[in-house]
Length: 427
Image (cartoon, rainbow, N blue to C red; front, side):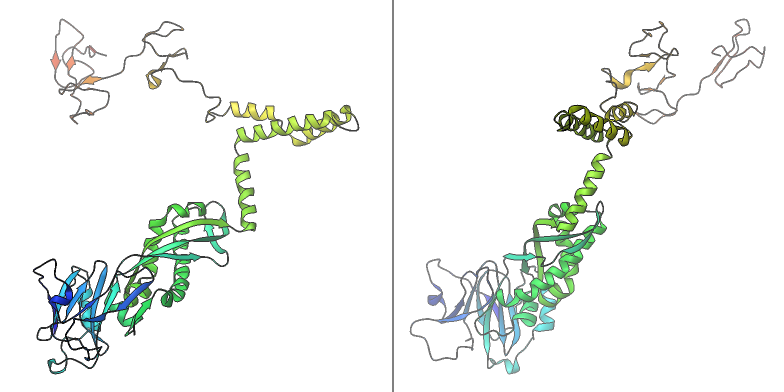
């Protein structure tokens, strides 16, 4: 017995006109995961038949976003995930319209059966429609702060909350392991109490993986896709293989440290900021300005106030002036770096120590040293041993005797003439 695709000749005809009996299910809401199909009987047909018997030739309509299961005595005997209209034929084998869904036929071998006894209808035959759409509005959150090994702040405790979505990717496994032979419908509320606990436990594991990857705690809301992938890996055995479900997306709305961790983070941030000489000098200048204002309005007199201010400055060991002086000697300080001339890397330093950008030194008048460059056969000018444009090696320089009377030349480089002993003309 199996399903056969039904060909409807006229768009104006109704299901009741085409079939004596038919099954149909309206769009399943976000809260309904499985709905039992209700038999619709046409006018003039037998209305006293058993509710859970599918008559040969019965029509079944499947909507987009739905899977349809034919169940006999609690066993799946046929299914389809293709939208359209089908006819139930007891004389054929299961058609198994999987529409390219990977693994459904393998699942059928586990949860379904190929033949019924004698080819006759069983005692209980039902049609179930499974919701294949993405299921939204699943909230999660940490009841208590969880430890997080932050790469910057080390061991802290964080709270988080957000929402996630999931889909039923194997309706056969979901029916066999979760919903079963329900009387009318199976809702999300019956499933989520257990799943939410498993989700939060798996999320803790996923966040630990994020910590191992070096993600700072306040970067977690930006890592939604990575967390969703971690979640599917963690829940693969419990959700995908056993229940036919997969996590689609995870949206972490907010991550907040607890009070003790917040104080620690603030101290570390202050220490990091004060490690910058510019920030430290500015903070000290602000403190000294405030101290001067307070000293001027001291109840015991301005002299006493400024005397205490001087003692505090001596105890501090370094005033803001010393900090600014220290900053000026640092080469990596952008506040005290010399502005570069236009052309930047086109400058050169003369032997007298003066930096120039032209062809002659503006201090002593010396000419800019010529670079040892050569021109390749391709026309590109180079300074190394190989052409940076075509990769050809630099051609070897020949030998020209400096003694014009001798006139010896050679393609091989030499320092001295083998005939008269004169040096190379170039040297």
